[in-house]
Image 1 (cartoon, rainbow, N blue to C red):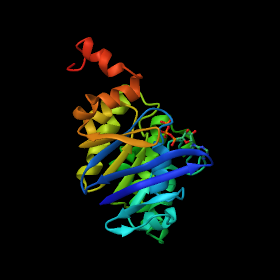
Image 2: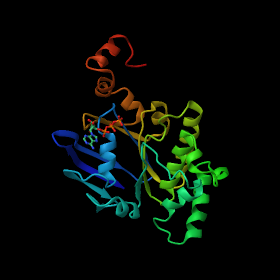
Image 3: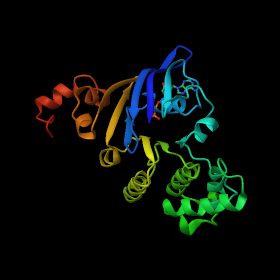
Image 4: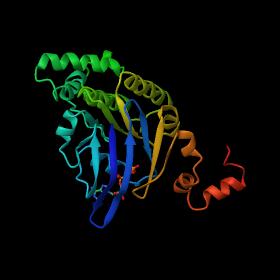
Amino acid sequence: MLEVTSLTKRFGGLVAVNGASLLVDEGEIVSLIGPNGAGKTTLFASIAGFLKPNGGSVMLDGQDITGRKPHEICLRGMVRTFQVVKPFAGLSVRENIAVGAHTRIANRSEALELASAVAARVGMGGRLDQPAGDLTVAGRKRLELARALATQPKLLLLDEVMAGLNATEILEIVEIIQGIRDSGVTILLIEHVMQAVMKLSDRAYVLNYGEIIAEGSPTEIAHDPDVIEAYLGHGAAERMKAAGGANA
Ligand SMILES: Nc1ncnc2c1ncn2[C@@H]1O[C@H](COP(=O)(O)OP(=O)(O)OP(=O)(O)O)[C@@H](O)[C@H]1O
C-alpha cells in the first residue's frame, strides 16, 4: 500500500533522513521506532507532504505522491496525526472532529453526524459537546486520532499518540488502535512506548541517525544487536551477551 524508496531530507547541512526505504502492506500495523532525533517525525512529514524530500519517492497504492500537498495526499487516503496536539479550544469535541470530516463532506450536518460516529470509535461518544479546550492530554490525543479518522483514511500515520499517557490510558488507546485496524484501516506509527510497539505491531522499522538499521517482527527487533547498540550505546550488545542478557 505504501512504498517509500531511498527517501532523503536535509535541513541545510544536516541530513535528517538518509536514503530511508520502507513498505507497509494493506491491513498491517507497522511501527517506526528509534532514539530521539533519529529522524522519525521528519520521515513522517516527508511521506505525508508536510516537507518536500530532497530525494527518493513515496508511492501510495502504486501512485507516485512524492512532494504532493498534504490535502491532496489526504484525499488519496493517507493522513497523519501530530505529536503536539492543538485542537480548536473554543469548539466542541464534535465540531473539532467535523473539521476532519469536511475533507470529503461539504454538508455541515452530515459532517457532524460522521464526527459523532467517529467519536464513538475512539471512546469519546459521551464528550461530544465538551469544549476541546477542557480535555486532558489523553482526551486531546484521542481527539487528534478522531480528527484524522474523520477524513476516512485507508492509511493512518500516528505520531506518538501515547506520549504523556499513563499505563491505563496506554492500554485503552492500544485497544482503540487495534479496533481501527480491524475496521480496515492500515496503520504506520511512531512510538517510544515499547510495550505498545510490542503489542500492536506486525512489523517494525528502526531508524538511527536518519537511516533504517533494522526491520522485522517486534521480537526480532528487540534482539537485534544493531538496535541494542543504537538505543544503549556502543558495545552494549556485546555486554548484554556477556551478561547472558541477549536471550532475556
Ligand atoms: N525544521 C527543522 N529544521 C532543522 N532541523 C530540523 C528540523 N526538524 C527536525 N530537525 C532535526 O532533524 C533531526 C531529526 O529530527 P526528528 O524530529 O525528525 O527526529 P525524531 O526521531 O522524530 O525525534 P523524537 O523522537 O525526539 O521526536 C534532528 O537532529 C532535528 O534537530
